[in-house]
Image (cartoon, rainbow, N blue to C red; front, side):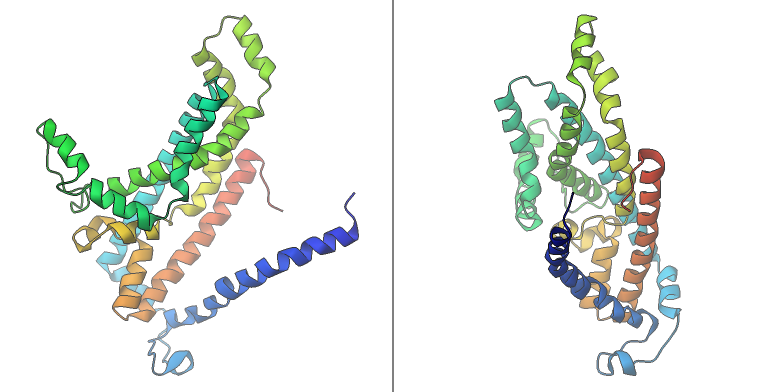
Length: 296
């Protein structure tokens, strides 16, 4: 039984994190009011005139804004789905490796890219995917190319998607590997006595055993549909691929900070925040409904 003194001590340990969260997350939200103003930095928030919903309505009238929302949903959704499938597949296959040292070595090599910054990885990708880079040299052997991977609007989104899959699927696989260890080993032993192959044991025991975890992760991922990865795209894209590579976060950065349209940029950010809150609510409802998962 937890003592009251231990419980109070745990609250005091949580307090610094809550204060930082409040200071850097909730306090800046106060200034979201400039989304409803014609903001002038010289006049400040209190002196800038109010325009109501004009900025938000203007945002919806912009063709660029609609394209940016589509790009964000398209890239983020495919990232979520492909990473989920790749992580589950990798975990199932790695679970079949019987030599523990080899299994751990493979696992370490695969999830290591997760800890690398996109600033570093973007430089590596720019070198590999350049017109005279390693990948185009390889394709040239087969008479293909050169392909400008980071400069063709129809190719760039797929570079973003699959480079993020390569970076993240190994780390997400840890969740499924942990779920696989919770499956009763006697089920595999009985199946082996009945003559089941490895594929049959995987299909009829492993996948059903981790199905609740797959559903849970999938449901909780709904809240990330509008998070396509600012740091990745910002370090990889260029004006030539804005039509297919620009997402909400980079759009807000461009129009709000580089072009000085602070009110419009904030309006786009407020729109994303409201939709994200709705999606987070939907994700937790789905997790409770389909995976019996609750936070409170």
